[in-house]
Image 1: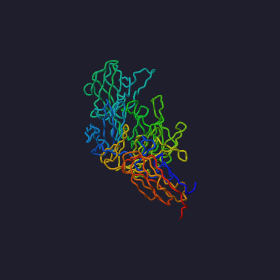
Image 2: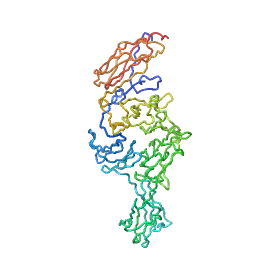
Image 3: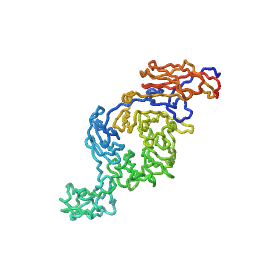
Image 4: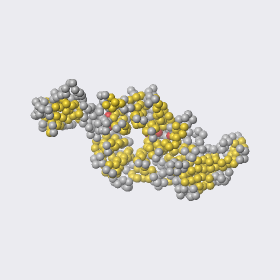
Length: 584
């Protein structure tokens, strides 16, 4: 090519941002704000939606929950220390019913099991059936079975003599003892002593089908664990006595958890600061029953568990950074002859820990380390884990955000939305590429919101955001609650393939293909050797714009498209000539 030949550059198939300061490919931007792909127009990038104010609550929003039962959607808001039901959702102002007060003013979480809504906030464990909100009452286990009144077994020694039928439930001090009456004994020996006083629990007993009450039909020696009936129950009658002994700190094992997830038809709990390396789980299909032996330690250190993530038929347990040890564990369902299904922990081979959160992002187990977003890739049936980095394009900016250690995440429209104060980094699951080392990476976009956001939640294709002032927004509309959304896209630094020569643009022949969005205020400017220069304000009415570029003797050049109204960009062209060598 002769130096006087016209060179045409076409920038298209835009993929995302590149803040790495490396040589940016023509389809990425080294500087972009509030742009993304909706995938309605596959080759088009466009301005993000605005934020529409839905309501303002009295206190900061720590959780928003949608619970559908009997074809009615209950909208629950954790605001301050209260759990409110927004009865006229989405009308404004909100009409609310207070369901519960005394909540922990911290981020809360929920799950729905057997059509019942369960709520956790690190202090409370509640359930709601659409009518009544209450503290979870633990399932009462039968801890001894087919006993004689003196506490010995009533089953022949040659048969199965399982004396302990069900383990203790940490959510309740109550338990049941089942006996077979001999017709003469009034005294019944329970399986524990030192029972709770009557002021805590007044005991009950079922003799056949008749319910009996303490101090009326029987007395109790709590120190020795003996129940004395006024009248000896008839021979071969089934006697079930409900007793209570509260174990200090048992219930708090679960109440103080800050993490929960569903796995293998059970709910798993973790994040208790008093049990930093522990994972608990409920019994099969019963979130009200957590046996005291369903307790697993991940490592001997006291490094906190930061995330529990189901994926690839195991439960991944991701801990914070520690010295000289693994930060990754996994729990795999295993059958045990005594306890049935158990979940022994297996130590992984990864030392780099989690700084904030983890998630199963479209079957990619990812978490945030001090270096950015990491993916856990396995080989040899989980025996070896290999970390793959996923955020190389935005690390130089993202990990230096002051609130990075408290990043909040939500999956939305195929993106992993990573919220850090007022900044949002969007990892795109539909666009992946392999870096120079052959490692799969995500493409990313970058947004800036008008104020700090403390809460983010996706529900059925809609994204909700809240702030410390109690304002709740939905991602929709074209403005941020009446304020224009400024957005721009900058092409990469183009030296036309001749880094040692100066260049001059062709004034004509420069066209951008646009998505018509009724915007007559699109600014086109150039950034010449780092300095922003020429500007033209054009309209997208025709679906394209032609712009004159008059820049001379530059080393590299960028196009910048910007507006305070929504716009969409398919492609842009730039023409120019190569001139002489660059001089000192």
